[in-house]
Image (tube, rainbow, N blue to C red; front, side):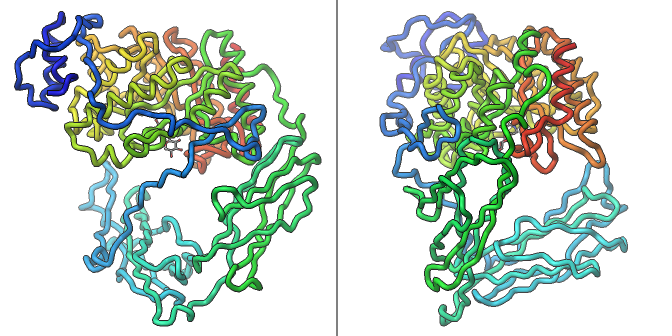
Length: 640
Ligand code: XIL
């Protein structure tokens, strides 16, 4: 029997509840069958009324981070947030998880069934679902033009709307102005294999009533592959950026050649003092670096050249808008200072590698001025940090921590245990090994940042969409006890850290909030360490359940826990504008200020240029880094 398993068998001082905890977690690993062995070298490691979880798996299930995983200094050309010393993950580049490619067998299995989503309040007996007429999988030879007609129909006689998901490069979805659309695509060498294209039809009367169809497109090589037309390569589209005069701007540009050869890039525009070089590690990327010294919009032209037929070229344009330093001045006081005066923190979630973005300079500058708390938006997710057993990628978090220290910003670790952005090796692991993997991961991650991160989202989103426990990979491996084990392990690792349970849709009444309070009560009854609840608050401008937020905050406070607003953003609904958005921000900030246990407000990003809900422009700086009405509203709320 492994040492760490034996350990929890041995007699220790603890309440009845904790014996059950130990036994249940043990059951999963061993069946809880053996009686206590005597040869354990355990001491009484009781924490409060709880038994220590005991030693970690020994030998460890996967390798701990080693010198091979230590980030190495990044060459200066990429540094847009100087004077930060940047590091990158060590080479050779870790292979990305291989995407499972579809096979001929998938194609032969026949068309995928339609997926119908029915809103809760709709009775399909009274309203037929929209559907597509005569839609089938198709086969096409590379180089030929494929045309597929999409004709949505509804047996109620209405004309359904429709929208496509991602189009393949070079494909189009053209409106025939008669209720139908045509998907047109000329696949080339790069597309040989089985491809998918997805379109959703919307019911005319209720646009949440939808039917989604995915067709498979088998692309084969013609007998004579040289018959496939060679098309000009193009520049991978690059969204416009707003930058600040005198900040270094770094643009990583790439050509796309659908014939599968490498395109070369040449800078056409004359940019004084610029450099334009092929990336040292990725030959398809060219790095343009320059420091704009004059203001105004700048169109940068790049020539993309085919390597097989060098006369075949196209020109791509990249736009940056250069603003003067003073254009970023903001009225009033900075949010972090206003918040500090009210004894709370004001924070944001930092975009991965923000210091490598073309606008990294202004991003880093505004963030340092406005915030005193930061979560990594994605760089601390397990799939990123620990993509393969025994491999660790810490560079981006290391950079964030260094930046935060330099600017007196506290770091909020997010998330440790979550059901999304989990590496494949965990999804495929034996359920009985998940407890060990989870414990090792908690210890390794918290240990690396023990001096710099004192606030942790230990478990993220444990509650199911309709209440109850979410059936995450962790839940499937350990049952409800995964929460106990995660929090207990986190407390053992850092007794001083604030341990948060973070979730969404728990500020409003409903099954998720009901589960939350039951969950807290049960964790507390068993003395599981928990310090705070994180309320994500990704809301819309139509949000008006402020009383519910107030009262749910109070219920958390009544349970002697702190409150963190962890991921606030306010997406625009329908006709609503930025003033409505400002009101919602303001009301939420006020609720936090009213509640003594509310310790921080963090928004999920700060500029609409970088938001995971970008289309809804949910943040309080525009894409141009100018404050929106919500910025002033937050200032006012913090001031009054
Ligand atoms: C999101 C990031 O913002 C995205 O960029 C990423 O692709 C997916 O994750 N709840 C959370 C966050 O706890 O970690 C999620 O962040 C947003 C929802």
